[in-house]
Length: 485
Image 1 (cartoon, one colour):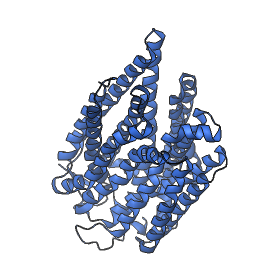
Image 2 (cartoon, one colour):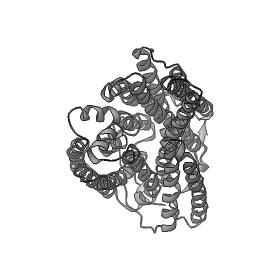
Image 3 (cartoon, one colour):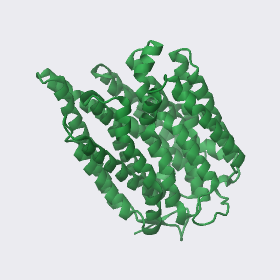
Image 4 (tube, one colour):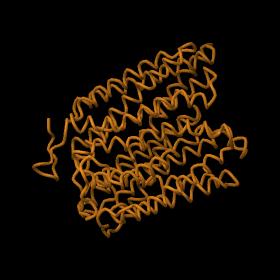
């Protein structure tokens, strides 16, 4: 059991530790880059003379790398100090950002994005693990509300930020703006960062590393192919199946290694019911979030003729509401528990998605704004309690593995959500066009069906919300949390 997760510094009740504030800021900066290139695809095609399918890889490669690297972070965070993990993660991110900014060709830009993602992959598990160690249990909801700003709002605001920046400059400006901000955050963070506990020296099973990268990376890549047209669906299915088989081998390998207490990703986190339920709830929530992030810009730009900047400004209030409500949601959770938040939040998510099934070429923009804001606020009410309950259900020595699995499933859910809505949209629109329906009307019908599918899946979050405990009681046995009903 690593000592890094057993030493808890004294923290004043009601205050957020400085180390957590620093990590939230750094995590926001790095995760913002996961979606910041979405609006830059046309610029890349023109500047670097690449096709749209190739240009999309600046986002796909980032997501793939995150899915492949995050499974290793559980082992990594137990091996190094907090300052070392922070310095390595931010240093790698800065190197990737600089390389991307000066990239003379698309290949170099792609390498830069992969390096960027490698640093980003460490930050969220580092933040979650550190928070669980240094924040008293009675304050975790409030502090976790601030974390929502980094892990949920940052990717939601990425397209808005890039739309604003691209109005005044080239795609390189996206990296040149982030670079000095990330550098300042890194330097300031290293000056103020304190180590939490001591690292544990342990070996790594390199076979598990390879199998995890191939399994989770392959799964995310296969899902991403569903959005590239009917010609890629067969290949996508084949890669998804291969990825699932490889993940199965990874699971078998981890179960064997657990007997010697040396797994790359400790699957014993799934023995804790509240963690498993929270993991399922969060995965479905991220699916809804990413699905709406893909569909709404397509609807607003292709069918309502809005510019990327106008689209970004229209969806920005929802993202800001999600972030600003995070701390308030956390305080409510600390006082009343999860039920007053998660159940209304999951119901609100269903209502928001159901409302978007009625999109049309004449729907007032205020209705779109209202539905999107309802969706974001509902997800905010769901994410913070689910994160806090899920991680709080684990014994301390599993915090790093729990945050690693959570981050990995987040990437898979994002890829699945994107693939699902794009596939449903394309299939429905293609069928209608073949029947003689106008392309615009066919695409609108496809979007309505895609939102309907997302709403139906979101109904599962209501069922899970009913099963979640209100709080976790550790009073009797820390290693076997008791669910407090």
